[in-house]
Image (cartoon, rainbow, N blue to C red; front, side, top):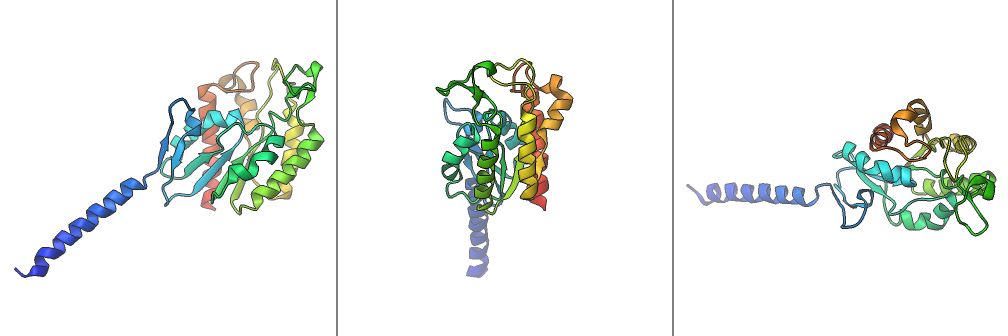
Amino acid sequence: MNRLSVILPRLLYVCIVSISLNSLCIAQEYVVEKGKRAAYAKVIDDPNLPRVLIIGDSISIGYTPALRKILKGKANVHRIPTNGGPTSRGLSQIDKWLGAGDYDLIHFNWGLHDLAYINQKGKKVSPEQGQHQVPIKQYEENLKKLVARLKQTKAKLIWRNTTPVPAGCRIRIKSDELAYNEIAARIMQENNIPIDDHHCYVMQHMKEVQIPANVHFTPHGSQKLAELAAAAILKELKQ
């Protein structure tokens, strides 16, 4: 038996072990820090998968963990580390949120906070005591600026329209989202951005998925919204 016949199998074994260990090191993972919500988990990317960023308020916070489970092994799902709030907050924070991240796709929404009512001190109040946090004309201007900034990333973009405001909400008026969604739809059409239509789905299944007199969703509802978002994201990533 010559020397090569002994050395080569050993080298092959070392290479296989090394590749296996490296694969373990880059495996996709979501690490939830103590005291923090699952939606804000630290993302350890699998470099072989596309990078997705979720921008939105508490509705998307609610469905982000389920979305990550659905897209496990298909995409690295990041989200901004806070509530996206109204478009005014988006404008002030968007550069920070985007950072140096090289995202393949951004799934985004603003709306429910814009149409919430506040008083002159900025405190959220009942509609008869205040005005929209971001009036609809200003919402339109803000959203145009945000879309322009997001397009600079060169990522694929998906707009998730604003989910319904049901009757009985303390700081919002039922169906106010319709006018805001109409404005947003026009902006997205002008920019060739597809719309992930959660509003239509919720209107058809409201009693099954949404908390009564509340803009938020049951765990079942968040799961359903995650499924919608996942389908929209996968469709765009495949194109």
